[in-house]
Image 1 (cartoon, rainbow, N blue to C red):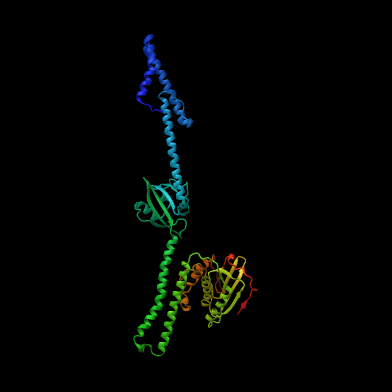
Image 2 (cartoon, one colour):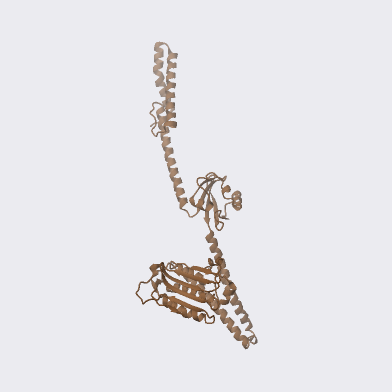
Amino acid sequence: MERLTWKKLVGELILFYLPWLILGVIFGYLPWFLLIASWIQLGWHFHNQLKMSNWLWKDRSLTPPSGSGSWEPLFNGIYRLQQRNRRRRKELTTLIRRFRNGAESLPDAVVVFRSEGNIVWCNKLAQQLLGLRWPDDSGQPISNLLRSPDFVRYLSRQAFDTPLEITSPMNYDRTLELRIMRYTEGEYLMAVRDVSQLKQLEGMRRNFFANVSHELRTPMTVLQGYLEMAQDPEMLMGPMWDRAHGVMTEQLARMNALVEQLLTLSKIEAAPTIELEEMVDVPAMLDILEKEAMSLSSNKDQSFTFEVDNSLKVFGDNDQLRSAISNLVYNAVKHTPNDAAIHVRWYRSPTGPRLEVTDSGEGIEAQHIHRLTERFYRVDKARSRETGGSGLGLAIVKHALSHHDAHLEIESEIDKGSTFSFTLPSRLVVDIALPHTATNDH
């Protein structure tokens, strides 16, 4: 379709007025004929204007109305412009949908807001982390919804080179990291990430190195002191040497035990997903641990009861399960008083093979229980040093059990005792016909 030009308009007017001009000359009423022609021309244009108005505002049909003369290219031109705008709107809608779908898939909360602070859009994670409501909060100033003073100052400074950390408005135990960047002209994009776990891991790392340094510093200081005394042979004569030798041996054993446990924990943590195909003879393992526990408790007068299903063997990692079970048994011996009763039970529960280590010790207060598996965490630090505890035993148990799809359960009551237990998945049971269950009481 050809576009409308001034030449076409002039030609159209000449063709329209020429017959009326000839009639006016022939009949002698030229002004009247030209006036009538002008009224007809105005009426025709008025009619086409009404058709265009109805098409644009009332009909809104994709098909333009029929027209003739100079109006036909106008109708078709507007129609083509509408088609182009519809395509662009469709492309823009698709682009926005893709952006929003992509933003919903991100691990971060995303908020788009204008330079004056009014919210344009946010994803679902932003609603969970920041408590925003969409679309209710559309157009609301973001500083009215995130009332943290640090965030308000950060927003007002307009200096977004470094991220900001604030406390989550939905959970005060969580820490959020905010990054703001220019998005489009007059708009900003804010990405929010929950960094609570990273902060916790960083704190655990600092505590880990601080605790390792502290645990090694004490025995090293003792050894250094005695070595300095050894420079003067008279200082370590007679009974003094026996005492120094005993203390140095004890401190070396303590450092060696700490290093061994650190290596064990590191090995278990660094181990990839293990194939649980090795048959572990837990009853035989408990038989050995029973003898070792009685030897360890020789001067504490503790009583032991081992109730073991000798037919119950499992698939797993022998070293890791031995580390987990031995730490539970040794902890019961070390951290319970004289005359305490220790009961170890290995049996087939409805949910799978289960180990329970129960003692009649002093018990553990509730506020300590959820932290017992943290590295170097001790309920009573002074007492742990007396018993040689490093605070790594239950951390080893936790990670070893996690590789066997199990977790440590802790129940305790003050002045009555504690029970440490875990249940392995039923799929790890070795289906081999063995003699009937045996029970050993001591």
